[in-house]
Image (tube, rainbow, N blue to C red; front, side):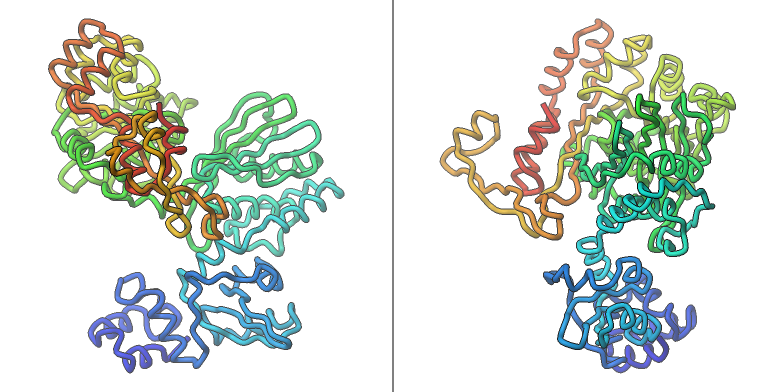
Length: 555
């Protein structure tokens, strides 16, 4: 769309110096609006309003609009995503279509030919259009149709993978099915995709905000084709079906690079595949995004800014341990220090940090990598996970010889990390000396801010739950309701619950004397540690989550 710069100048929404710099960088073409938004000179809405003024097409605000699914269904979702448009208004002979570029004649002609209606272009902000896509453009029906077709044909055609998930039309049915499956999972903000073979059906489940949801049931006849397709994409042995395998897929979705970590598991009805979705664009989190309480954040910052020592993050699989560690790395990393990580696998790639991938076949184990890393003059070392005695011992030795070591461990709470390390075979006096702090965390579903409903829980109930409150002044809490923005669940996103334990001299003495985890926990609480449940209650009081969620993820 050319000539937009003059409209922006006339509207006075951008400074002449900023506009001149943008024109010098990208010119007065289609890249100009994206450049101005990326440079934080204009918002998406300001760009859309300028486009509306420039073209004469009306501007529509989709941020809080409730749209008719029947109208949206008039145009195939693949077409909507390809041209970045959405039908929103239907009249007798016309169709109002929200677009980023209302001058795109090819898009208008294609929509007109599909619907046999006269298209009336409307202008919409790019961020509002993306949100509308997430809410309304689901691929469930198309997936069902494809699975039926594939089941009838028992098609297993294998064609090379198209790197863009949006480019589906020319693909074979099995490829379109897999691409749509991945696309739908990304749009639903899923963290994992489970493809589970059964006696008669292939079941697909998405883990969204920590909870599994069944999304699709397909004919068992397509099982081999889908699994083979995913194995080819992830570059793992398609002929090996008797042992577990790991692989990785990189895809492009709406201009974003997204990685999927693939794991196969042989079952009685065939191979199960689990794909962990790793969205690199969404991982540039700051310490504030982790939602630590003031006390916990202070403790955590003090431990990771020390020149040496060992900081552990504990919790079950999928509790956000890696996200916390990467955020800590970004907090401490700077050009003056050498940061090296050893991971299995490398989940998120970070610029300026040396990341080492564990490779068991090549002999690059955690232990071997750690030995080499310590000869590479590191200041900060991140160990993906402590699984055995040797890894634990080398990590402890590294922390005692002037390095800051960050790692993860699977324990139920923070004090249990000390007993876990001694159980692995580490010397108790070394564990007590090396450890600086332990962070235990869980993820609870975050209340949808658009539809949460205030309510008052009876004081007796709060007392029974040990929820801190004044019986004479019961606090206002919130509960889940459900709206289109959260797909009717009442929750959107997750919030972390933390307990941060610092290792004091008294705690060291308990470790050396082989004290129980209960004794260590009592001492930690006496020294000011806030438990997971108590941290959860503070987040309930802030309206971030619900009592039910805290009870679900913590004890």
